[in-house]
Length: 85
Image (cartoon, rainbow, N blue to C red; front, side):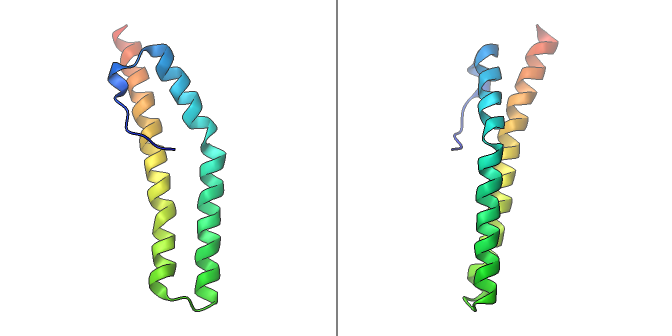
């Protein structure tokens, strides 16, 4: 789902298509985050332990920050090329 790519080596068309691809994953990311939060709430109410619950609550933040970072990196590279070109 998330891969580390060197956006500076991509063409502008590739960057725009990559941005569309990342934006199209927004619903899937939100669904996964909601599912993980739901499991964390369920585990908290069914006495699965605080470690498991808090571990699951950290996961959506990691997923969301990675998604946001990828999108911002792509948009920054597109903006950099628009200013230069």
